[in-house]
Length: 436
Image 1 (cartoon, rainbow, N blue to C red):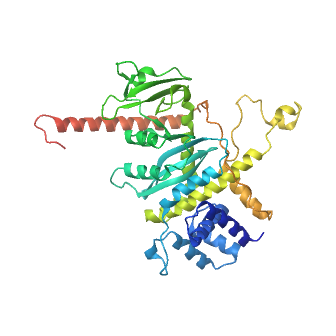
Image 2: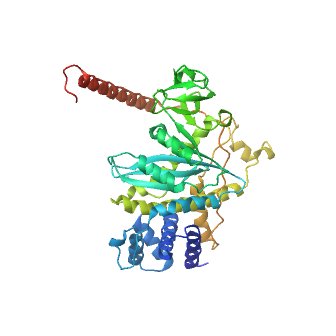
Image 3: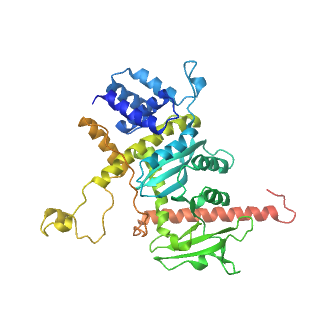
């Protein structure tokens, strides 16, 4: 199979799942994502050089073609050029994920989080979580430290995905305590999904059937256990929430988790919140881990949003290939080998529990795609095979003395800042004092 045939095959896949794109837009998106997979970079120079060598085309021609793809229409050469509207791709991207999802699996985990690129960009991202990876399906890129609330951006991102997932599916939406807001909880519920949002322990709640308000720490369970009840959370009437409150604490963990959701108490487990960490691993992949976005020279957030479409399609492809490869990979069967076999001897005594993945689905999928080119085979099959949601917490890792000292210093700085803020408020509210 020639390189041109491979590009045509992948272009047809992209066009089929993103049918609203024009043919030129789909072709260049296919080129971008293919070049990223082969180079392990989203850099324009590397991608254009690789594709030029593979397709026997002029490097400068390809470079200009790839560059103009994320330009707005006024900056493009020609009179019939149009701007790529990224927001129109969010719902089709999520449908693409569902198309590769097994029919019998009707559970989906989404994560909301924000990341920064130095002091240049802030990215708000909604990602699908699968097999330790995060696939972005909606995002908004802002100028770093841009003034104003993030609420309208999050609402718009979630609204673009509304109605895509069938109603009979169970969808949980996870977010860290820095993103919690009553409006976010209510919008997730309004879309038929289930919020699974972490909150701070410095709040009060009232158990259903009682009129006594207590601090959340009042119900903290013993290490290794969880406490879950229907409550009215937050004493302030403006922010009060009727919800299920989940508290869990594990031995060796620095803090306990407090999570609010609308699911019944008997249907939730605190270990589900472990899934949220996968989106942070996804951010690492987009930057220094896989695609090298942290090296970008872009300054325009709108152009960066269009480039992120290729950064979204690339992990979707490699995770799909890696997920399919992982489930078809023969499992290790050490217990069937003789006790003196070298494989059993080098595996250790098994006192530390089963090992995790040796390769992420992102890495395994990318290697498999590259190997298919070397072996002159067609593109390998891609499918997303989710794992059951976790019901146990991993054993806490022992922290080094240096890391403990660093965290202690950080906590001390936070205490100093809080004391200074309180002192400033007292000075401003004092009798005869001028407000700061």
